[in-house]
Length: 463
Picture (cartoon, rainbow, N blue to C red):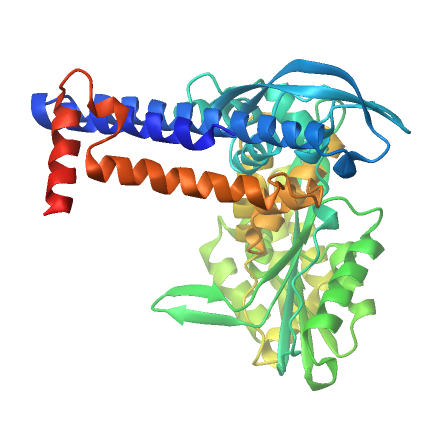
């Protein structure tokens, strides 16, 4: 294992560059770029050394590869890593289940893998917030040449299963008097056919205010691939049962725009109350009587007083004033919406603990900003997978860590005999000792600013 020598020589070249910058003066940005390049080279070298060292360990220790025999040696492979391309050689073995490069398996690399799992995890994490193509280019900002196509990023995401990530469960169930569930959907354009709905549901314990700004207390989000609406609500109910003392909850408020699938959530929760999202009610009112300020003011007064008969009279007056068929339809739609969701309107007066619904804003922030705010088309599989990734991040999970967790082989790549590791530790101490004594061979040759600095360091140490 020549790892220590590689690290030390690379360190010397980096130190030389730093001292040159101090002595001669260089553009700071250029200095940073060159320094980053050196670190990337060091990273690639270390990765190569580690892989080849473990391959040699397997080659020498038959007990670590029982049943596997050498078929071919020094097969070359190149994979992209976060540092750049890593080129290494390994042994091809024949075993009871066929042929394999064992060191590739232990590193989590498939037979035709061109990207290592750490880079794949970084690509998936980037794709949560930006397009596939931009995600593929992003790593090259830190390691030139490390860029992949948008198709590669998409294929990498499809190999990840966000639904398999275990939800965070409290060791002690929380006690709350009121619990709030809000729901809405995003309308996402498809590559072919009509648009599709991607549902979003989230649970929280109320709001806390910092001035005029409100923040949800302990929110938890649900979205992505569900075979049915019932499966979505069952997932929400399971989370609540595992997180809260259900017996202590007086009321569960379910807020939304009144869509049947949202109102249907009441069937899964005892003591639940539907609350109509005022944002959608405002839209209907504005379309109906927005051009009549007197009627709009009267209609809102009727709604606040829970007087549906007065609301009907006001909208009838609006009908007599309306001139176009489109406007008349908007007025009729408004009354139908109010009548259908009257229980959700009354709930604001009956339940002082009810809070305003912010589902529209959360859909915009969590789903729409990635799925529908820009002109792009999605397959259903792709949209549901991206929605799952978005809520995974919103729930506080590290997308990168969860991806690597699913790719874990549960094997220790750096497994080597204790004697070899002990020898490497002694070699490292010896190299450092030579520097401090000024006996390093690199200091015996041509005098440079680096050798002067290191010799001065050794002299100061001896004093």
